[in-house]
Image 1: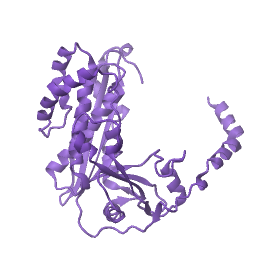
Image 2: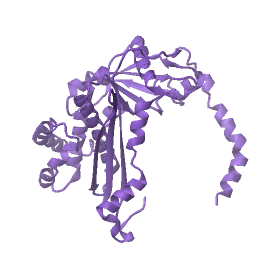
Image 3: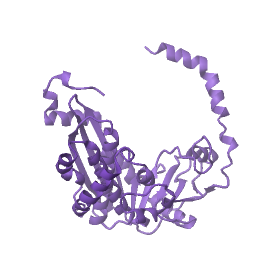
Image 4: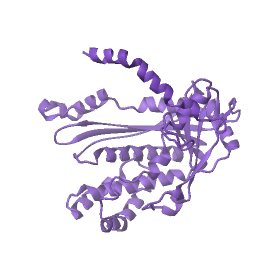
Length: 353
């Protein structure tokens, strides 16, 4: 029973509300950064697609069973068209499992988006989440792996990987080299993880070549780059105005990243991201936008008109549908485990999450 928690809530109600009031939303002036602007719907025909990905895992004593799904959706004269890519497999227990699986999902998401561009005439592709964050986030293995090993991977295996990536098939392409790398590095998983990270960077950089066609949208953000406050920018803008509108754009140069990228460094360092927040409908949620190019305020207003046209309740419908379709739930993992035959074994062989 949770009786003590309910009692604690009653006792601390006033204290906690006082702390909330003291956070100081009103002390930050957002008036110069936010523009209330009624958004019209674009009257021109714009081909918009959206995509999302999902991953889930189930722990067993000897291994981890995982499933990945990625989906892209586009509206055509024939109706909604989908491109879906998926994978199931097992992976050994080690300290980088979560980072590695997150990288796998990112690779599937981006490669599925590239398939959408290859097979359809797409004017805008709505990408769920932050592309800039995925791009500049340091590899978890980067500092621990010796430089000579990284040089060996880039010199011997990277050219093979780049050749394999010419295929449009959605998979973890670097896994084709796993046996070779395991043999050379005595089953040490770290060189393989490094190659997977290189693959992730390569596919992101390929997607970034689409530039003006890419729109990354996040429903949540803890970023404080606008006001430098302890309070997230998104919360400050939400408290400032409940009207449709957008924030003044900010531009982030990837060249400012202190480290060099191990692949396509010149191209990636040349990228400029435009970052802004917007509300597509009065009193609905604020969204964070990232564009992998320099966009002006007028560019943003035109872009929002196109996205507004395919939105409801302040959120793009195609992106919402892609997210709902692609989620891998615990019950899905249970059913997949039964199909593979894992659950025919003793329950003692399973570790519940």
